[in-house]
Image 1 (tube, rainbow, N blue to C red):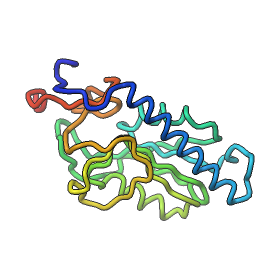
Image 2: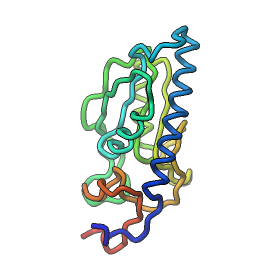
Image 3: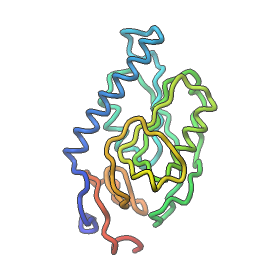
Image 4: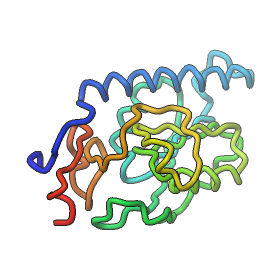
Length: 193
């Protein structure tokens, strides 16, 4: 498996440091929201909901939420956009139920990568119909704007990366490589076999 990786783009230590910093930024901003609503000093009153997009955001979300001391809940959503051995998004399609109890909540959508924008755009649009108190989008990786098919604003970004097909730290190719502790570029010969 490691032999299939051409290069390491972001190593384990860089990821850990950045996830720690993202957690602190999110905690501060969410605490500010709660204070504006008159919940100063409490832990969130169950009003904070993280919505990770499965399966890619699983590893990132697990590490990220451990950086927050606010009371929060998880409501996962499954979206299909890279079927099988595809290295290009085939369009986002909801593959399960969207959480239905987000009205008045502070929602943080978490995804592994912002590339075409189709997945995050779809989830953001669907959640907005429930009238949450706020929506934030947090991604580990963001590709350049020229690859977007749908404009999406990520409020929190771990790393800006080039337009490369990457794996590791939750990102996969054909269901594999998610368990790599770093983000790496897959060798061309590993794609399609």
